[in-house]
Every structure is written in structure tokens, then in C-alpha cells.
Length: 602
Ligand SMILES: Nc1nc2c(ncn2[C@@H]2O[C@H](COP(=O)(O)OP(=O)(O)OP(=O)(O)O)[C@@H](O)[C@H]2O)c(=O)[nH]1
Ligand SMILES: [Mg+2]
Image (cartoon, rainbow, N blue to C red; front, side):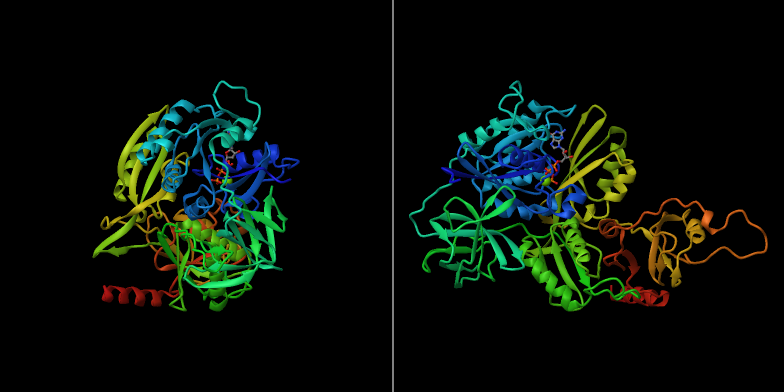
């Protein structure tokens, strides 16, 4: 089908406000997709976690128009995925949950869109929720637009109400709830068709990359002018200012979730092409060698860093396929090509310093690596502190907390101690919403405490605002560790004995080594333990032998919970099958020597 016109839109929102569900519904109603088993969240990690991690393209046809849609992730750590697609589209659908209202990431994605001069369409979603308040939500969004300095044209935004999960959208709340037609009509009415100047020489910009085992690197591009044809020789304007020529060997457009091979594509469309092995995000393809490159795509800087090291624990090499520095380096280099928010400092071959937009951003990379067969160790996440004009600066975040009102006191107190400053507090029924600004440093390691303090009922959500002057010392209580003093296998009896002293991370039968951390202590002291010590044998008959001991289930470590609880003198050891926490120095004497050395240095 040859469309008359093309519209390119991105769907943006705070995490969980319903972007993917809405995109899936659009594909079902207008994308020629049959059955409801398909989802834009195609990656296994996305399906396991129920969140979107990577921005993805699809397309639908409506009234002779092709609408290219980019579904984006809402979690703040994947903000760079959103930033890079905003340049490739003509407008955004800003989805807002009618109950939650605008949240930290709503502000971020809207700010980026307004700065680029886009004119968003607002979708107030999930109006079926019991405490949904679409009118109030609308007012808050308007306020946010004003706050962010929207111009008159942007302030005059169109609003559509929706229940994405039921596949219905309405221009007015009282309208019939039938399908998503009213949303699509609004798109056609208020978004100008993509500029389709096919007479100028071709120019396209890369905003995403992919890999195909047969054809090599694939570039996902927006064509701004002209016609791109297969087999044609075109020029690649690299970000370093050089120009290389190449031939397009494969050319695709997007049809639903599939890519469709084509021989040519025209200005306005989003395409994927092969033939340029060194192509990078932000670079421009031109038909003639003397055409100007488009401005490069800039994304926000990383805020935290973590060292990646070769695993040197006593169990090194047992479980992984890829274990060497060389292999880790190659993998990180490959990641840098597609992960625009990531940076790596390779200067120290014993420990690569990986910079990311948050703990989850790096945790997902590590999770992908272990699934591919990698084994490695990582250090405790650290906030990036930089110097600007002689002043020490650190990242700050906006933090929104929703808690049962009875817990608000303890949360305000704890966040305050971590240098959070309260900006606003509102109460609704029994829930209190508190808005803070807090150094990222204060937030690291707080999530676990927050869950305990609110008995799992609180919700916290934060996102980077900017680098600000260093907030001074933050008292930081490391949770003390239970450190194994033996090699062997953990036995239930020993773990049961230790379980009154804190939280245990391992199951009976787990293989352990000297210096491995097997739990944390509730009082915060470091404790040497022997988890392999069984019950004294005796001739007396005893009612409880080892198998019958009732253990409280251990809190098994995940990459994220490990990153959160680990101390500075520990490494998290990650293999395809295990996540273990360990002391950097395994023996007692080495640890004592290291801590004496540290004291002398400081
Ligand atoms: N009540 C209600 N729930 C919805 C609606 N739309 C989506 N949900 C639910 O909201 C949750 C999040 O939906 P997603 O579509 O994955 O949200 P998302 O914005 O794509 O999330 P991220 O990509 O991780 O930022 C899911 O549990 C959906 O079932 C709706 O219209 N009403
Ligand atoms: Mg999603």
C-alpha cells in the first residue's frame, strides 16, 4: 500500500502510564495484526520485568496515512532512548495516568519535546481507575506546560481521554467509548504531514542501530529530504567531520512489527538500511558528497559510575563462557555503539569504569551480559562528581513519594537526613504525596530502607534534574556484612542460627568461600561466620536434625539488590547462574592491612 501521507510520532510518558499497552492496541486495531498475543515489549528482559527498556518502531495505516510510531521506555534510567528518538519524529503523544497525574519522567520527556519545538498531543489515560481524576490531571498538565516555558502554540495542546487497555479513546469524557479512532483523528488533524520533499538530494539521519548476523550493522534513520534507493552509492558524514562513501545493500521500512524490504523510500519515512559498517547514531547520510550534515543528536550525561572487573573470586571461571578482560572490553565496545547514554573509560585495563544514567541502566547491561555467558565483578555504584569553574558539582534528582499518610513522618525524616529538601506535600484520602529535591548520592541505597519504612506500600520515583553544587557530607551507614570464614557448603543449621542476627542471602547447600558475604547484620557490624558448621554430633537422640530445620526464606541477591546493599569494600560477582557478594580482600588479615593503608592515606 502506498500511503498518501506519513506521520511520525513517539509515545512518551512516565513509567507504567500505559504507552506500550496503547501502542499494542493501535497495532491491533489498525496495524493488520491478528490476535492479542503480540506486544511491543518483545525483549525477554522487558517481558520478565513488565517494563520497556528499548525504544521500538512500528507503523499503522489509518485513512490512507501511514503513521510510524515509536514506543519509548518510561523509566528514568532509559531517558537517553527517548532523547534520541525525539529528533526523528514530528510530534509526541504525552500519556499521563489520570490517577497519578504528571510524574518526574513526565516532566523530563515533556521538557525535551518542548525544547525541540514539538507540539505534543496529551492523552489522559487509565480514566477507568477508581481514583482517576481526568480534570485535575488536565489542570496539572497545563501547569506543567507553563512551568516548562511552553510557547502559545504548544500551550494550545489537544487533549484526548483514553483507556488504553480497552482500546478506546474519546475527545470528550462523555463521548462514546468505541475505539482508538478519535485519537488517530486528532493526530491527523493536528500533526502536519511529514515534509515530503522528494526533489532535493537525499538526506537522512541515524537515530538507532541494530545488528543482523548476515548483513551486519543496521541503521534506523529518518529521511528528511529526497529518495533513498537500494544499490545507490551515498555518503556518510561522520561525527568526527570525515566523509565516507558506501552502497546501500539492504533497505527496509516498518510494517507493524515486521520490517519490509523495499527498493526505495521517500522523505518523511523511517527506514532501516545496511551497508555501512561504521555508521553511528547521530550521523547523516547524504546523496551528494558536498551536502551539510544535520546537527548531531545530544543526550544528557551519565550520573553514576561502576567498575567492571574480571572475576577473580575462588569460583572464577566455573560458570561463565566469557571471562577475560579482552572479552569484557569487546562486549562493552559493542554496547557503546547502540547504548547512547552509556560511556566507558578503558584506560585502566584492570578495571573498566562504566558510566550510566542510573543503577538500572547498568544492571540491565550486566543482566544481558550474564545471559550471554559472561562472568564478571562489579564495584559499588558511585555518583559522578565533577568540577565546574573550580566548584564541586553533583547530580540532583526530583523525587516524588506516595506513602500511606501514617508513614510520611519517617520518610520525611530519613530523606531529610540524606540531604533531601521537601518542596511540596499534598494529601489525598490516606495517601500523602511528597516532592523532594535530593542529591543522587543521598538516594543511593535508600530504596531498601524505604520499602521497610513503608511496609512495601510506598511508591518512589525519581529522575535527574541537573548538576548542582556539592551538598556536603551525607552520613552513610553501610549495612554490616556476615562474612564466611570457611570454604565449603552452607548448612541449614548454621544459617538458622545466624538468621536471628540479620538477613541471610543464601540457601542451605550453597557453595561458599572465605571472604564471601552470606548475609547482612541488623545491627550494622561486620561479623565473621561459619555457615558450614553443622550441629555437634552426639549420641543423644535429637528431635531436630538438619533437614527438619525451618528456615525463614533467605533474601536471594539479584544484580540490583546486590548493587543497592553492597559496601565500598565489596564486589558483586555475577555469573550466568549466580550472583554472589564478596569482600574485595578475602582474608581477615588482608582486610585489616587494607583498612590500615586507607587510614594512612587519608
Ligand atoms: N486501569 C488501567 N490500566 C492500564 C491501562 N493501560 C495500561 N494499563 C496497565 O498499566 C500497566 C503498565 O502498562 P504499560 O503499557 O506496560 O506501561 P508503559 O508506559 O509502556 O510502561 P514503561 O514502558 O515501562 O514505561 C500494565 O499493568 C497495564 O495493564 C488502562 O487504560 N487502564
Ligand atoms: Mg512500555
